[in-house]
Length: 339
Image (cartoon, rainbow, N blue to C red):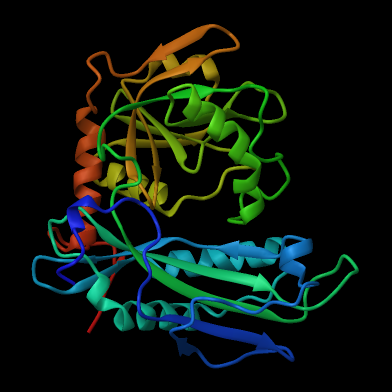
């Protein structure tokens, strides 16, 4: 793998050696199969293409200083995929089969796991789709589960540094009682217009307000939002936010550091009181926020006066990454070390 410049990797797709697949048919899941084929054949009437029966996950594998490969929080991703499957009526993949598939696909592609201290990792993308040929609006009878992997660099080009985000009131990411809590492609399709508008304006992402009242902070583009003040970690409580596994991990680490953790509604006007704020998710871990502009209301909430990440955000970021790479003890049992 000398041809790969690990430190220059972007967060994009690079072909790897194998992917794994498993089909659901006649009421049961089959065996996990390995393939080098990066394409799939679908019937033109498959439910995933017409009625959005599609779900995905995202997790990462890291190579430690000891050369061992560590996968972060497989079981949590398996549970979230099951929750999404319940939400859009797809066959639930057993947690054990999910874990087996993840470990196998990483092992098969271990030469693509970036070296320690390269700043890169192996991104793991599980995907579940409805494949039955149907015209009526009803759940599929058959499903295809697959996982591919690809080495990636940081999600944001600058890595761990502050970026501005923008509130765009004319857009909603998800309805309060819709699919916002599920990891389905439709939520991301719904965010593309707003996201591109934000990027064209010089912002890293959109900070959505709740769709019902436009009063409370919801999600931050493809990530969860958190704010820090008075030794308290605050993150939104909402019926339309994806439960981020990274955010869940950061909340636990904040508690470990002696901080208070609050999951509650965050009124927009409270944004100006935070000492630090960030967006968090598997791809970026933490992307600290420098300021939040509400362009429609002509308001700006400055979070970082000098434009640098705050000390608590940095400590949380470094602590989580140290656990992922095996540099600090995994006291919560989050990491799976491959044999």
